[in-house]
Image (cartoon, rainbow, N blue to C red; front, side, top):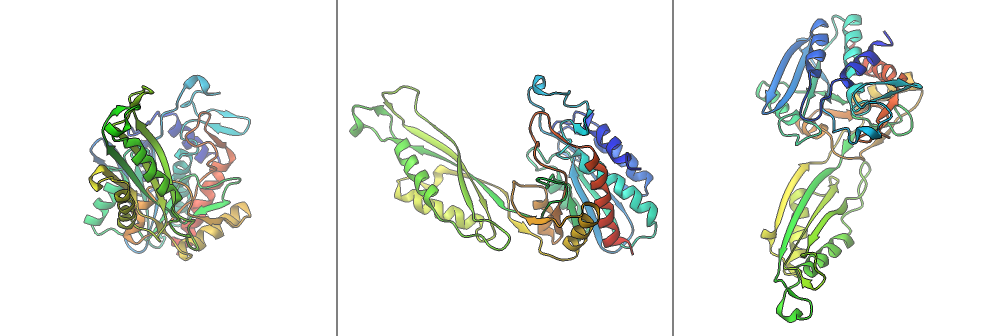
Length: 378
């Protein structure tokens, strides 16, 4: 049984499911879950395959959530092993998706098989929400499935997302929330001209740089007990013709806030637009995209069960964290669910030679099973 999760992880990694392609991963998962007594729903929205599976008739709903899509492997020649070969070498499992997050999905499936066998009359319901759109636009994946569940009055009470949360050792970090993410794009229009005749031109880049300098100097907030201070970062700037004697007539930049609950989208946008006015930049020069709101799960039943499970398997007490990027938890938490993220080490995610310790797959599966037993064991 200890090898079952590792074998399933390798079978999933071997499927080249570059987002949004599922490449048959969900069919394999559904076959295993159906055999364990789960009711299966294959949900396709747009070009995205999703899977909803549930076992049990009533009571609190614990959901394991994850994704089968992966980012492209990058230059194959840079890999020590073929990215979709799922090689085992010196105790490591190599492959695209080993950490992010096919090993977690495999661990969840095997944990659920064992839990259902040991607790055939368990209290509550056990569910799976699996998408192939987490690494992509994230429109037709978990977000769409959550809407589908809401239309059927299905509410998730507890959700464990298998994102790679660990930093130095399995289970050392438990993510109990995420910051919000707001993306901005501004295009400043001026008047192109010769650098020797600035009075006949309007340097769009000067105005843009002035705004960006003001934004970079802002103190947004101090954070709170669960979140670090809000951060602002410029990611791209483009201006000019490439000639050294031409004043740019247009200039544009892209930037991002990772913000905590002290902020909201409307407040951030209003603050930017006030600063923009001082630099002669109109509010219609901006385009905005909100990737997700911040969310936090405070200590309670789910965190208690997870901490106890990690302590039993790993002998450690996981630290709570809201750091890192966004995850699909941002679509589930607003429904009122308690949401945490727990998975393998994240040291090599999205890198060539992505890998995790092979032994951690079985240990992670043991943790997931113990979480289910504490919440639904009856």
